[in-house]
Length: 404
Image (cartoon, rainbow, N blue to C red; front, side, top):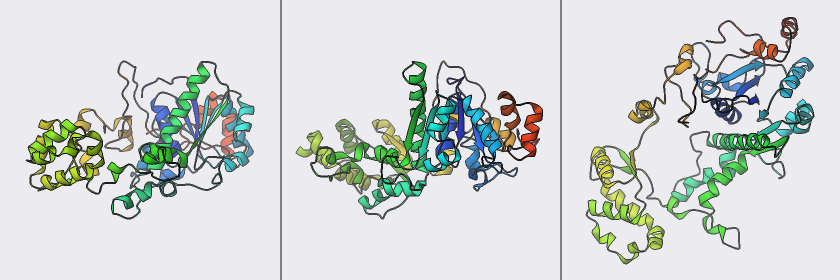
């Protein structure tokens, strides 16, 4: 953890991946992130696989460095606790549908009345100014709606989902920068309360069309989207004699070096190759030439050649290959850290490094409501009041093993 956001308190009312991942990034940067969960815990805690002591990998990898407060928000006493917590916070982050959190009593206007300087971040499915505003949304739906699932069809395949919850994670990063911008603006006196709306649909559309808007940027009619280089069927991992490699010659000099290596100086001598615009337009032909040559040598031979030619390259890793990757090992990317106490043999670290900034040990993802008593104590509840809230089922009780 790098405590750059020390002093910022975030109330995290989120579940699954989108909101929890955003909250974890803020926690990794040193914010005090208090995760508010139902008494039984949020759904991601039970997603397979689960450790022998009951911690799911999905939950552990999206909720480090947070505190857990278990609240029954169906009870008036539980809502009263949340109102007091919100009054003490800088940021409220949620990924509920807007009408649902408004009915609960914690829409933006209600929260602003409690805390006139709240930064209120709604990580939702669709923007509230459009006709899709009330639709439910999960990652697969957003991949389909955004055009992402159709991209494989442009290279001869059929529509398919990316096997990653990419829409959630892209939107989560938009939420993080939205919160950070608001924190910065508030610190400089530019804003008071602000409603930061982060819709998954618009986030992923913007992310994809950054390059794929292409010719549609200038066309009078709404057509022409699609970056041609990415739609070449020969832009793909290349099969070698014994495996797969990736390579991306990009500049004219890189292509010349590679074509000389494979004995295709004839291609480099073509008039169209000399013109950068034509070379870009016909890049699919170059990919086909490269693919035909790669199959003649082993993976090791090609890795050596690409390194010697200073062409961007990699072997094609499977997921398990990453766990023994020498670079990731050298930077300590999978060191289990405090998660080892909960039985983890490896965990993910924050990929951003702040050299010259203080770092402190990470805190593992904790059990449901592990910090309930401590958080309530900090809000001014007496020991007797906390016990009474627990007895009536408004807040959760921590078990002795909750901080392992």
